[in-house]
Length: 85
Image (cartoon, rainbow, N blue to C red; front, side, top):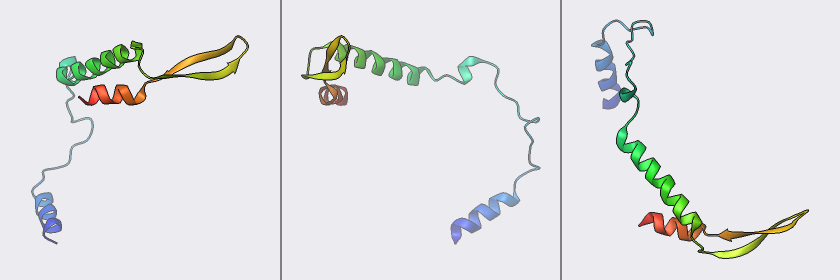
């Protein structure tokens, strides 16, 4: 009940509501891109790429194709383990 009362009290103190035409959007790309988040994401992609190249995990046969069967490596558990470290 107190949460409802708090939100009701705070609504009374608001000024006239703004429309989208009144809102000023930032014009620089630095306002939309967080450097730390981008570096973490690129590091994750690089780590996944390196782990997928390593010959870790057992080989299984893929679906039957005209050329035969391709071999695929099951390395999901090992890549998850390495990235969790």
